[in-house]
Image (tube, rainbow, N blue to C red; front, side, top):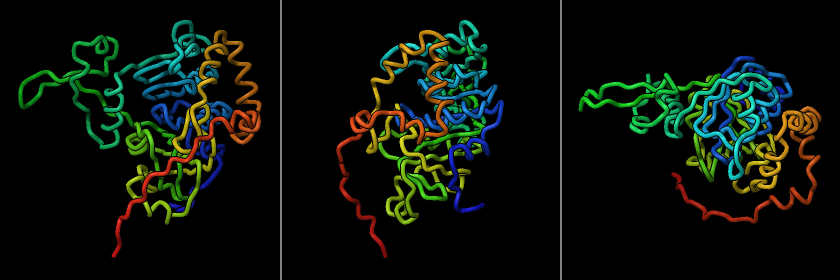
Length: 305
């Protein structure tokens, strides 16, 4: 495999994401790869199964654009604001197309990813028993505990066709550093058949090797590496930019009608060529307001012989 996997987001999506794939855009509130979602929309991918613990507004946009046939999730909402209006319109009214749903608890969905990453046949858990989820999801089943005889809930492995994981920095081979909130990125990458890494910075391998504990995604499972600063806006990247809370509030207003949602997509997704074009439309004052002050960690001496 070529050790240099650098390419544009357009190339990475064209290479790895196909119609009818199961796609997982990773990141638990943190480092959500919006740029990848926008490129998938621009390339007109259809009949996708979108999987994600918290769909957030990137999946609302992809649903409104007609990319999705199904959503696998454990919480759906515009964080801190309210409902995902496009998700609800599709599921409840079939606009722009009918949307199937498959719901889990957060632990249930992360358990599915862990089972996929470790090639387990299923993952046992107690949290589903007694809840209202099993009657609504036939994939949540039970087995008999061989040690106690108790009934135990289980979920099947999840192995996405494609995972997109945004990181703070990576080398050209795909070895990737993540810090701050680390959600399901590692398990998602190991569970997926193809992995696209997008990174705020591309660094030399020596930088990655200088702090191996931060390497959550290794190169041998990575197919494509994309240098994509501000990939996660309007979500945030620890140490690079803050969450654009105002946009989340604005999205609730923009999506009250399907037509106004499409108007946004026409301007901010279809109306630009790439993430660079998207960022040029954002006022510099807004960009400056999202940049954090430095908060450096103390250096660690790993030692050497």
